[in-house]
Length: 337
Image 1 (cartoon, rainbow, N blue to C red):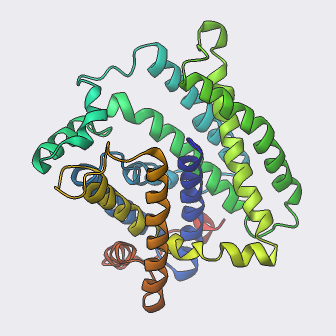
Image 2: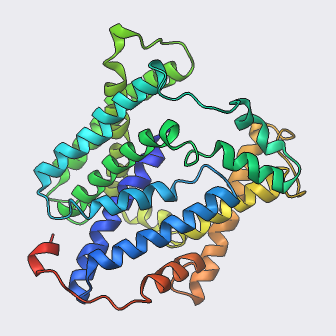
């Protein structure tokens, strides 16, 4: 699981970019202007989430990388693939080595704050510490790795959109099967190596300088393996019915993401004088609580979408994105897939 789902979500963000681009062309919308405004609003939503609720926000990174997708939207699949590998594997590996072994990631604050700040019992004090340790506050120490990695994965998602990965399942079955095989062999092995590195059981010295690149590439393959497996299983009627429940939380993903953080703040952390369960419950109870809350979110999402077309934050984001009329100023060839 570790590092697979930030990979998956950033891939899907790139795929979403492709969907929006093609729809904008059909509707006669000036996609560049519309998408820039959309990313600016998303960045502001992420900033509010990061600095007022929880500093582990990923939305700002998606918004930041999304802007640069506009620069590559007319590139060929071959060129996109080369740059996806460059960002997702090569540059990510270089930054990882620099952060871990060359002192690129030296923080000016006591790193113990990261572990202790959920216990802070006064919200203004919590905000101060949250701001101090936030990755975007410590941009050069914390953000290059995330931004490079997520942008590379966005390119992967954009490529999947261009080759109709989720549509032409039969014609792409060789590619789908290849992702599954490599993901659950090479990918799993690389995840195990990643675990050994994190646990301090494998020291990445000069003789193993190649290892981060292999591990990162393997974990990307494992993520693609997960995705390809779902695409393949999605053709089975029983599995399709079983997983159809998740479409409701999927259509309200941004709202649920923000509300999960609010849940942590109100129930887990101590800052707002809520339940303050941090440090009081076992790991098993943590899992039970997480599953219970996700179940409640799923039910609320289902009930909400019975009367509405999208989640409340998604609605506001879309409404604000369309407050200005966008007309086509580009040639059709500029935005066609």
